[in-house]
Image 1 (cartoon, rainbow, N blue to C red):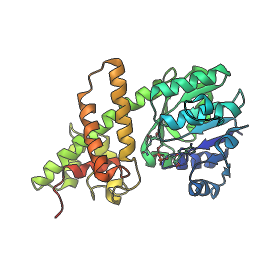
Image 2: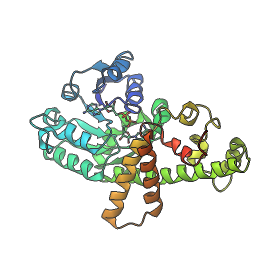
Image 3: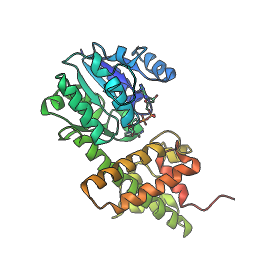
Image 4: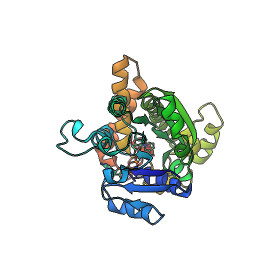
Length: 305
Ligand code: NAD
């Protein structure tokens, strides 16, 4: 049975690692936050004192980190600009270790790490996810992979333990491009759903009734079905828990920045994504960065007196 090193045990990584344990795998964990490691240790994981310690000798290494700079620093160590003499994961893993980064980062960083790994004959795939914290807990995530056919095949057993739909988008970095296309669309849907619901409320409609109508009409979309941004419409979603947990506004701002950078590189026209980024940046600047991204709904609601 595989030994998997799991590094980055936040809102997503924690429940993903727990599903590997449930599937009977040996899981070594590392995070900068001791409490995050303790929560996994309580479920049977082996705690490591460093990321390199967790990765050395593992068959598979999975990382779930905030952004590209964290991924570059962790894998490349002193090969990454400005990181002193620290060792990176590539310095300690064996040649037959499979590296899987599930973070949402820029495609260029994913390609850089894949190329550096390939110099030592090590397979690396980018495998960002969709499905949110609920999908991470339920083991129903969608994985969107970029990398070689061989690495994609080798990743199946571990990805299957954490997800339901596993796609191969193309070569290195392709998973990241597909993922930011998706998140750009998600942000536009969340903003559009929020303004439509608030307009209905302003005209005296019950947001639950309006949501039921739109869900099965031509405006139906994932945010209405699974993640309603209006408090009280759905149970067990962040809007009904004070917008806690879920997917942070700061992370959506990061993803929308990535999508705009990608649009510049390809000279693509993305007016809705550009507007959604501005709205989310504004929302973050008003102190909402650590709240769930569905809290953008409050930008449309009248101020409480
Ligand atoms: P998070 O901030 O909750 O977790 C990140 C974790 O990484 C933290 O526990 C942090 O301590 C740890 N970390 C940072 N640097 C580290 C290092 N050098 N070594 C070890 N641990 C380190 O974030 P999250 O919500 O779990 O998101 C992780 C990634 O997944 C992000 O790229 C995000 O965009 C993406 N994502 C999130 C969601 C969601 O719904 N939350 C959905 C899809 C994708």
